[in-house]
Length: 107
Image (cartoon, rainbow, N blue to C red; front, side, top):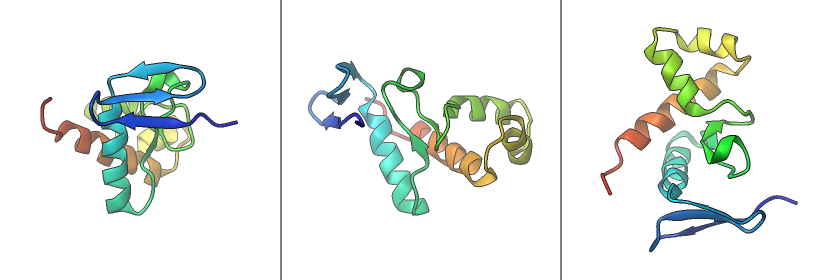
């Protein structure tokens, strides 16, 4: 059974019904939704029980920050995709997501 995700605007937290966890990263889910509207698909998976709740490349356990780190180190999108056996579109989506997160207003 999949975890139910609940986002509280007041506390800005992301929680799951099973197991019980809470993280002040609910804004990541909102950023993912915003990017999904633009792209027409979900850019990343955010699952509290996978990679400690870090956003991961869609359908994988590869954290989106790894994609950004490798891109910053000079690897191309194609090289990142090859390194982690990812779809090029999924790598681009992860980069769009991380860019969107960095543009969020400070809280």
